[in-house]
Length: 439
Image: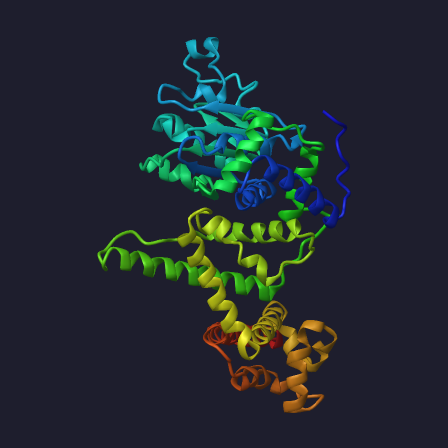
């Protein structure tokens, strides 16, 4: 292994390293660029990836080649089978401890003490073993009997030829935020390229010319998670709101599709948990980093199907892209994004007043120094003049929303929510000011 790489690189430098690594993998594993990008997003966000395909499509080769691009990380490999017990993953049991009724695993060399894991044919494992894996995959802790061990596990790639449905496997699937189906490609030229690579490498991973240190990857994850003091990837308030609307619209489309498929029969609905929705923000920052940007843009949201759909299934991806395009077109028309930004800025002003009620005793035009308030203050001066009486502040705040004419349904809904927040704030502030006036 080479020397560990410094972590004080720019976002552009990090993006180039990742781009070069992805290109190298793509030269070895043909026609898998989208899954490779998805895998890098999983590594950047410290999440897990599930690969599904028929036999002989190269799932194992892809996973091994991805992990080969990094150095300084321990890789645990295993092929699951029905006969295996949890000690296959956690290490053998301490027999002396077992004699006194304590289940203690010797975790050295196991998945518990590894940064990377590759589990082949994961659904061949029995439910008892899969259930034991859940806390390790999710909380990064080994919880067995009285044993509670923290794990450095960063990301696992699992492969399977089929999905097995049970209560346990549903919970397991929830641990794999990223999922992909790899379909066989029968295009003659693609098959020719695959044959070329096989003649050179014989189905083995290729030695990369340069590896990325695991310390660098861990630092990238800190940037993605917003915990780096050196680098920041910004997500604007408008972008946050836009993303959540896209996700909600996709959820609506997916449920409508499911109802149509079962001919309106009752059944389970499609649900995106708040936890998964929150993790989509990390994916947005990962997508921006891969492009060498320090800010998230609208186009990044178009790739959120990496976690909300199954990559490799065109109909799944198309449905998410439809949700994204519908919302984008609606907000792009007639200054919709400008209105969203204005209302969100106004909501922050309302929140500041709620937190500091005494601000209602000052002319609101004094907020002009804050850039995010300019649109509101410009309206204020046009409507009421430069210096309004203090007792008009409530009327000013309410009149701003009364004069605000939404250009689309998304903005209309946001205005309604902001109006409710304003009314609640005005009641709270009035009570607080009355309390302060009492002797």
